[in-house]
Amino acid sequence: MEWIQVYDPAGNAILSTVLAALPIVVLLGLLAIFKIAAQWAALAGLVTAFIVSVLFYGMPFNSAVAAVGFGAAYALLPIGWIILAAVFLYEITLETRQFEVVKNSIASLTSDRRIQALLICFSFGAFLEGAAGFGTPVAICAALLTGLGFPSLHAAGLCLIANTAPVAFGAIGIPILTLSTITQQEPFILGQMAGRQLPFVSLIIPVWLVMTMSGWKGLKGVWPVVLVSGSSFAIVQFFWSNFVGPELVDIAGGLISLVVTAAFAALWKPADNWDFSQEQLQPNPTLKYRFSFDQLIRAWMPWVFMCLFVLTWGLPQSKAFLSGSIENFKTYQSTAKPGLSSQILAPSIQVPSLHNLIYRDYPVVSTKVDVNQVKNLVYKSKYAESAVYTLNWLSATGTSIFIAALVTAVYLRVQLSTLLKIAGRTFKRMRWPLFTIACMLALGYLTHYSGTDATLGLTFTKTGVLYPFFSAILGWLGVALTGSDTSSNVLFGSLQKITAQQLGFNSILIITANSTGGVMGKMIDVQSIVVSTAATNQSGQERAILQFVFWHSVALVCIMGAIVMLQAYVFPWIIPATQ
Image (cartoon, rainbow, N blue to C red; front, side, top):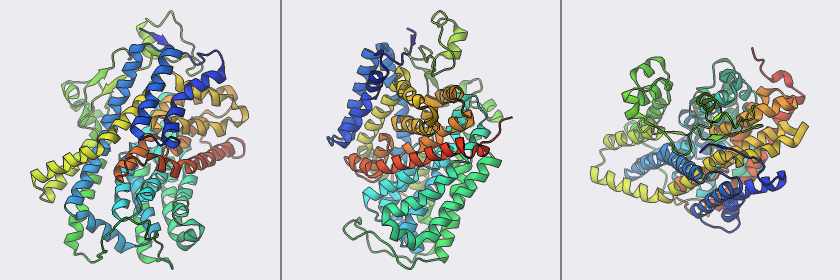
């Protein structure tokens, strides 16, 4: 049954907006005010969204059920699979006591917590975001910080704050490439625009991290390292995005920032060695700094394996080969005509009751849907919402991390019985986080296919001359709803373009703001928060982490909104010219 979305079901813009926002209000209210566990708050938000979508928006019941299933499936693969594999690898290093050597070797470079956070959260996290994305930086870096003795709340919160500036170029540039597809704009141009907005934030984030930990006084004691860390990444981010392309921005920037910051920290020491109070610190054994070269190599190899496999899996050539045919590999096109190998390695399933049956309407899309044409196959292929789930079990980033974990087990000579115990322990620890993520993605997909997300987005389009500021806020809302900058670009990219044209703003600026503003919502979406609680073994503390990061998220998106406003009215020359 075809269905055309309705964006004002109540016949009143304010009342319709309230209805659309109700699932989010229920979710955040239960989580932050009533202290309900994240899994039950997410489930309640999903149930509310289902009721609103079917009873008030008129979405067909079967389509709503299909959207929920589609979102839950995507939550488990690829996102849940990444987190499960990352925690599994971490647990192997704990079981074999190699993580003790890793954290001690980092502490031997610098025992100053501020510099440790910069190296792990910001620089290494940016590299992981570029190579994998989808929660990988938070899962890995939060576990590393906890192992180093950071308070669990700070380990989770700091990693969430740091996982912002790199996100628009994450996972080999997927958010920008997706935004390009949605808006029919050149990806290189959008990458250039993002590279003229985000470097300002990349300079700010290291400052923000250190001040969050130690205040203004702590920042003054370590400002040279902060400057080196932020500027090295920001410079690479600008030049790579403007002169090379959007795909490898974070990988290049993260690696260079990591090397430069580590080298500087080895040569320059702060006058005061800052640490958390003893009451805040996690129990941590006495640090031993002296290790043989062989010991260091052995301890770091699991993480080297992970980086190598993740980076290899992230290359377009590898993705095409691991998910398609030989022809796909030769042309590097994963969208080539599927052959037998692609049906086995990455079978695609058209979601029943959903695929090509839902239509977005004007003004979310540029043309009002003609109800007399919805049965037309050509019309359907052009305007209907696709719903195809690809089970890319081999090319998924989580698979690369899982293989790295297995290689690690062989390298460290872990017995099979021990490995199975670790796997069982990991799954038991992750069962509720995975359930929560499934509920959250189901909620995000339901809001997309029901059109409630568009109702919220259209509210922002009525801000007139202030729209450049609110274009960033709209992207922020999209990521907070879906947990993904890529998904936010899918939700609101077309709407941003249409609104920019209607209000007379430069489309490139406004479209890009959806992604660059959206990254600031990454730290408050429930999916990311659950990933951080799982990585730091804080299940049930989602409310505390949300409270820790919420106002940081609001402040940073306002800064990005101000940057977009300045570029719209004061510095329009900074916007790249289209050919």
